[in-house]
Length: 488
Image (cartoon, rainbow, N blue to C red; front, side, top):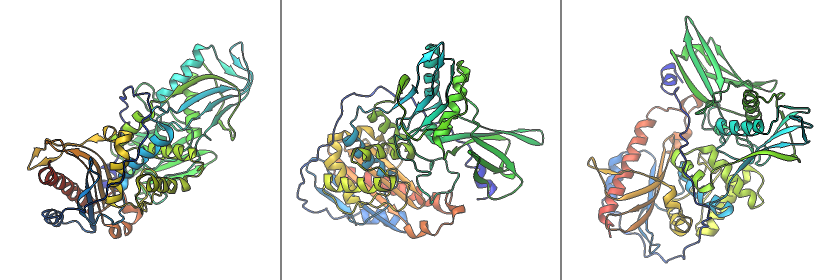
C-alpha cells in the first residue's frame, strides 16, 4: 500500500451506539410451508440491465413472492456465490432461534473471597459473558458500582476470564494484519476488540499513543504499544513481545494528526488493562491483570447486561460489525454442542439447510468476511421467505433507499448489503407501492480477480471501487424493474 492510499483510510470513528430498548419476547423462526414453484418468469429486460453494468465475473439473483413462496424471476439462481456480509442475515436467524430475541450477554465482577474493610480477601475477577457490544463506558459503570460498594483494594490478584466463548486470533487469516474489522473474538471483548491509535505532529516529530476511547471515557492503554519506524513499507507491522501487542507504523505515512482503530489479538488482557485504569480513577487500586483459565466461583459484586439480542442484531445489521456476528453465531452454536469456531460456520450451514429446506449453503464463518463461504441466490431468498417472517427479520434490517432516474422509489426496501473485494451482494425484502411483499437476493462476484490480489492490494485494489459502484447500480436497477414488472 502506498502512502497516499494509506492516508485516505486513516480516520475512523467509534460505532454509534444510540440503541433503543428492545422487546423482551423471543420470536423464534417458524419454517413456512414449502410451496411448489411454478418456475421463474423470463428475465426479459434484466439481461440488458446485467449486460449494461459491465461487471466482470458472474451475477445471479432470485426474486420470490413472500405470500406464495414462489420464485417469480431469476438469473442463474442455483449458482453458489460468496454472500459477503449478507451472511449476517442467516446468522441473525440462527442466533434468534437458538438464543431468543430477549437473550442478554452479562459481564460480571466476581470476588473469590469476602470484602472486609473495603478490601477483597481473595482475587477480583472480570468475567466475560461473550458480550460483543461491551464498551469502555460499560466497564466504567462496573468500576463505579464497585466504588459505590466501598471496594478500595484487593489482597489477591486481579484476573480476567474470557472462556465464555472459544478464542480465535482473527476472523479471517487471509486479511491483512492491521485491519480493524478483522479482530480476535473471545468471551471477554471490548470496543469490538479494537484499540485506538492516535498521532499528532509536534514540531518535527509526533506524539503517538493507544487508548480505548468511548463517549465519556478515554483511558490510555498499556498492553498495546506503538512506535514510529523510519520506513516506507509496510505501513504497519505487528509483533507480540512479553505480553504486549507491539505495533510499528511508518513515520513517512503520517500526516498532521489523526487516529485509527487497530485490531486487538488478546481481548481479555485488553479489557483487564482498561478496567484497571477505570477502577483506579474510581478509587480502586488493582494489580496488573492475569488471565484465568477456568470460570471463577465467588460473590458477584457487579454485573452489566447487554441490550436484548434483537437490538444487538439490529445494530449488527446496520453497521455490519463482523465481531458481533462471530460472537452471536458462536454463542448459538454452543447451544447446539459445537465448541469450536471452525465448526460453527458449518453448523450454521447444516441448520439453514434443514430448517429452510435448501441445499449447498457453506459458511466458513458468521460474518461473511471469509471469502470461501458460498450460498446461491435461490437458497438465500428461500431462507428469507421461509424463516424470516416468523423471526421478524425484515424489521431488523436497514431500510435502503432505491432510486430510479434520480428519483427515490416509493417501494419500501429493507435489506443487508455485503461487500468484499470484487464481491457485492444485497439480500432482503421490499414492498411495492401496491403492497406486494417480495424477497430477493442479488449476488455479483469476480472470484478469480479477487483471488489474484496480493496482500498489499487487498484493502483498496485497483478498479475495485468502480466495480462495486457498478454492482450497486445494478442492484438498484433490478429492484426498480421489479417494482414495475411485479408490482401486484
